[in-house]
Every structure is written in C-alpha cells, then in structure tokens.
Image (cartoon, rainbow, N blue to C red; front, top):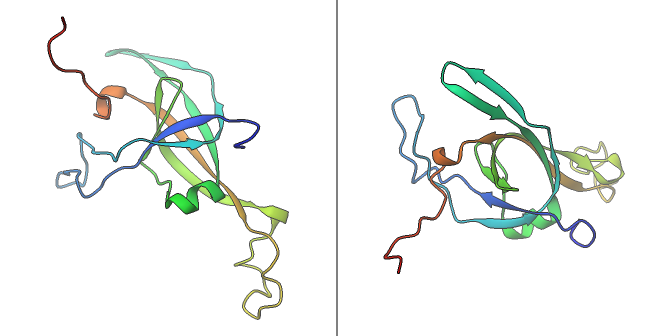
Length: 150
C-alpha cells in the first residue's frame, strides 16, 4: 500500500475521558485527539440526497482498509465513533473488521496453535472499516483562525 498506492487519510481518535456525556451516555460535543495521517485503500460510494422537512442532506458511505503492520507500531486501534478525514469529508466509523489473514489462516485460532505445532503460518493483514459521512459542524475538530486581518 505505502509504495504503490500512497493514499493518505486523516484519523481522529475519540477521546472518551475528555468527552462529557448526559445520563444516556450521549454527547453533542465530542472531543478528539490530534490528527494522525495513515495510508489506506479507499472505496467511496456515490453521494445520494435525502430531502425532508428540514432541507436537503446527502449521504455517502465509505470503506477504508489499513495495513495492520502500519497500525500496530503506532498503537492505533480503530474503533466505532472515530473519524476519518478524506477528500474534504469526515467519515464516522460504523464497523471494524480484522478478518483478512495471509494464507487465509488465523494463527491464534489454528487447531495446532496451542500445541506449538502450526502457529507459524498466517498473520492478520488488514483492518477494514465501514463509515458514513458526518457533518463537520458536529465534530469540533476544525481549526479556527483568530486575530486581526490586515
């Protein structure tokens, strides 16, 4: 991925300790850690529009695949609620999956792994996340300029 595709996304980890919640464990003002840049393979769906009494809104889903070998040394754990920034849009993670293995074998679930017989084959290759576009104004992660404009 890193040598040939070179697609980079911004990643914002949800900071649960700094986010204040109500009695239902919900929050309108979520707090995120600083931006991290990660290489990924990206598949965006086409944009569809929704019209209701409040106006027109659009919906877009995306799938992002990351090399596990890029995530582990940086201690990055992709979780539901985290934000991915790509192409001017912010995607909120809905689902994560880490079930792609080299040679199709998960060495930790191999029948001979506990006996030390067959654990040398296969390893987890990627983490794939499904996400949807979310509104920028909900996130509070955009930097604001201040001062006097001369």
